[in-house]
Length: 95
Image (cartoon, rainbow, N blue to C red; front, top):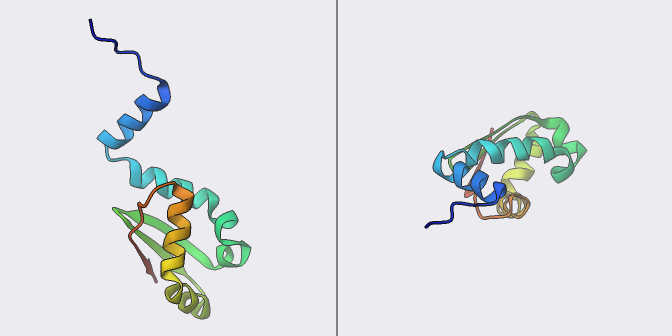
């Protein structure tokens, strides 16, 4: 007889993978933690955060900050992936 007992966390993770909910879950996690992760200054100038497939889209209202983030894109991706706990974000588009 097959044992179908699984911890709730494991079932939840299986459901996320099967329903392709991971991008929306990670988007919500990034929105909630953005001020802590990036600091108050960057948070103040961040108008939108969205995650589609493996690309993070940011709308930044400050041109100098936008330029700094573009130049630091690799570090930004590494920081975000470390926060998410896996190499999920492959690119960042800053508008």
